[in-house]
Amino acid sequence: MKLLYLGDIMGRPGRETVQQLLPGLIAEQGIDVVVAQEKTSHGKGLLPTHAQAMLDTGVTALTGGDWTLHRPEIYPWLEDPAKPLVRPANYPAGTTGRGYKFVDTPFGKVLVISLLGQTVGYRQPENLDNPLVTVDAILEDTKNQARIATVVNLHGDYSSEKYVIGQYLDGRVTAVIGDHWHIPTADARVLPLGTAHITDVGMVGSRDSCLGIKTDIITRRWLSGDRSRNELETDGTRQLCGVIITVDTKSGLATAIEQVIQLVSP
Ligand SMILES: [Fe+2]
Image (cartoon, rainbow, N blue to C red; front, top):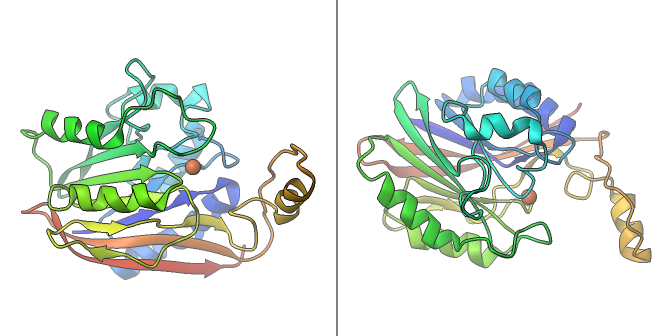
């Protein structure tokens, strides 16, 4: 089975890029399952309509990050076990939504788990649980539930966290994918015990920008310290960043991982 993971889909430019490129990628590469990081509504969380648009384009499941709880309209999706969208699992107990879900695919169920790094910026709650402890508990709780693959996403700032968690889970899950940076790293590989890993997969959205945001807004803020609002860049070349993982559905481990970076004009 071939599984494609796409990094942060950054607002409308990101959604449009998915709509332009994903169907062709699925056909050309023989992709069976697509998991993508949501950030699809104006770069901050997502609305049900935008989530549905991504599913309609071929995305199987959406992982969550630091913006997932930003829009209450999506809370019913986060609560519903049948909706293929998760929030970070290491939010404090009682937080809206579910941090992992089993997602149906033609081959069987895929367990999708999202985690937030502990150094992901000012929006993180202080009482965020340790992602390693959280993922251990999820794997223990679900150990008797059949699956063909387990995909773990760590959404975080620090390369150290996103790198180390791959080593920590090697041999226990199919893939550990880092994101949130929007800049892809060049270290995609299958780890010694069979887990596919990349420190950061990159993003889907405007390339000639500051991580999807208009560059002049960011540089002005850096120069003057003003608190201007972010505005998505909609002009120029767009990029799609992902990894394609070949999954042995019997063992639930990976046999290959290949980085994908495609460019397109709007
Ligand atoms: Fe993020």
